[in-house]
Image 1 (spheres, rainbow, N blue to C red):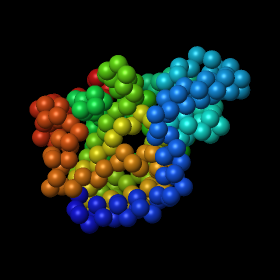
Image 2 (tube, rainbow, N blue to C red; image 1 turned 90 degrees about the horizontal axis):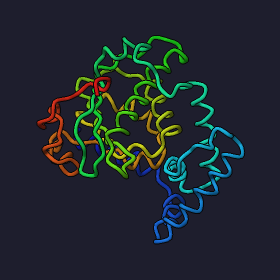
Image 3 (cartoon, rainbow, N blue to C red; image 1 turned 180 degrees about the horizontal axis):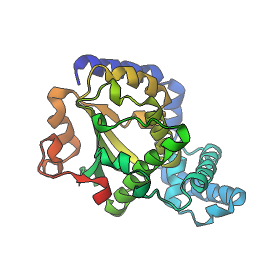
Image 4 (spheres, one colour; image 1 turned 60 degrees about the vertical axis):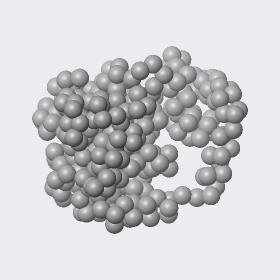
Length: 269
């Protein structure tokens, strides 16, 4: 990524920030945060179970993720979680999407896993130039998006060391062009990740960024919530290896970015 593109991204970030958000975040940076979280987890559990009996089996870690996604606001986090339960019953009744439902999407060979970052988070790689937008209706488009996220998070979950809840992603945009641009797909994936799987993304490195990508980025950026924006790093081309090595040991780098680890397709993990 050129310095010009980096400056454009930083300018978008500065425009989206506000003093009120910073002040609210500061409220929970003291030593009592853990105590506050425990109290609000219990409050939220009682609230959502009262409104939706299917929430009775929810674990504290999931409740905590939704709370953190809404800055520990019980009312907002509860509404978000109840919406997620309704979404899951409607679109993922079995808890997963079968690979047999999306053979064409899998054939694009664009999603891989390999290695861990220094925080112990599994690494997911996406090759954006291999993505071909679906020429279907919105409803028909949902299964590929759902599969990509559910299978990624499922495999990440089983690869996470004890006490870890997040994954790191590397989005490689080398060769990306307008034929790969899929605003509808990007927004669908973003909405599902933010609304249904909050606080699962640890870091996102976007690499090999072509200039024309910024047109699509400007359309997607306003829909990214502030917590997610903080996790995104646009990597300059001449600092690719140095930037990744800040968070990933050399032994854990995938071979697509100069490391020793061979990529493994997500469906084979």
